[in-house]
Image (cartoon, rainbow over all chains, first blue to last red; front, side, top):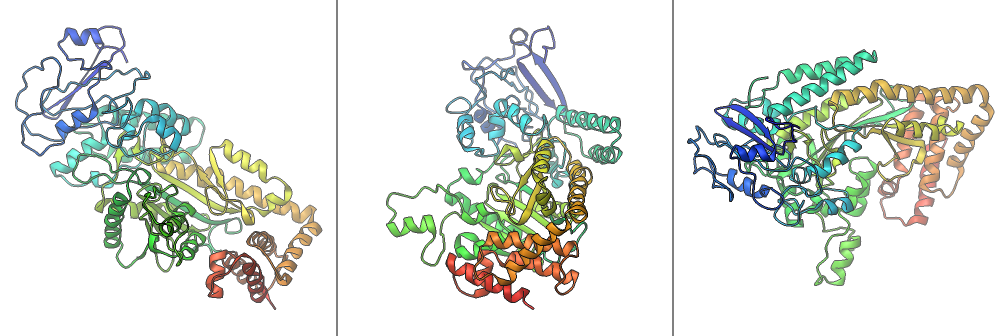
Length: 240
Length: 379
């Protein structure tokens, strides 16, 4: 993906949620620095995922998260409410509510995989590495998907006829309840606006293909799925 | 058991349909942190998961299911459950490669590997809940994933099986927190299951295609269409009795109802028709050879003094074909169909020993099996 400001490849991705509105920015290294965005500590340019998680998995209404180790963050207004951030299954994105979160990871899937206390690419939660996974054939925990996304992505695509994104059932308890907790959980599990749009885009594509191939019953099944998607709450990041 | 009666849509070819959902738990209230999957966790952690899930299942499905702690069950009881397709072979066995502490006594070590003198293995906390008396629903806990919800129905009935599995999934999801992320959907131990976590499969009886020599072509075509072809007991088993399980491989990137549509509406009708065509061809062009095969099989079953499981299944498969094609008539078509299906279950080792009410070694089983078949088929 290209930098918002110039034509170079974007390697710094920032998503800020302030009062329920999501703002996304994608910048290359140069533009990010020019704008005073921290580009992260460490030789790989990543902050260990576990550090971020520790910051945000906290009781409500406690202090704002501690500063990251690197350059200054702009002064932040007190967050309106403190809620757990949206954590995408990805190496890059951790989002703070009301805090201009600094999200640092190279988007290029080079050998240096994301994050982890321990060897590069080890899952911060269970310690499994990609090599270990290749040997054993099974992952260690749910977090492995995020920790090894760069390497798992292509493998999963190959295993599932080129699929890149889940478009089916969403846990039902997301769809009911108006409590803040339920909405927060929905936000976390449904992902950002991009995920939502990607899901819809994929389904529409499948629908067009089915119609083109005159497979009308199949098309009807996909259309039903699309309709159901329209009924899902959009991510807290915004409306559908 | 769902498929014993031989009822259901397309029951001449399709014995049963099965839908399975794989689910794992997250730590409740901890912002999406996942518990380790069974293979990675310690025995204590697995015991905790087992206790939690067992309690929730029994609350949510009170009165509908019975629970079995497999690590405390006898080996033969576990095999009985495998033979009834309620648990996988892997689940009966438990986790191989358990770390046995150096301080373990020889007796403990032997127990770990083979089960103790009562045939019990104390290792690997795991269990299963299944519905009684119909045995259509089964929920394995601590197999490859924390939960595997399965529903089986007779004949070609994937839509019904999916509806039921989906309903149980919703019920349990109210009580437990499932690992799920926007991109990869339901998170499973093996990435080949992520997304919907859904495997839909049918048990097909394909003796016609075997006899015409076309079965390999069908297996290849199925693999080309991205379907898994497995034997009678699923992964890693042989196609005894001319039974083949056909299932989807792809679980990510398609909505569940499209996976269902592809299998039930697009692919299976063709395979079923292909088998029926093979049977019609055999009747039209090779009838005497076909009858010869069928009646030799019946002869073996009614007269042999020693017979292995494999040989019995092969013979029963041919007799079943004979019943379907009205070549064989013992008591009546429906009754014959039920009888043959039932025998296919009773010749299995654990069932045989249950009927004989004692443990039998392999030689004894061959004798007892032959006797049991002669008695039940006998005129």
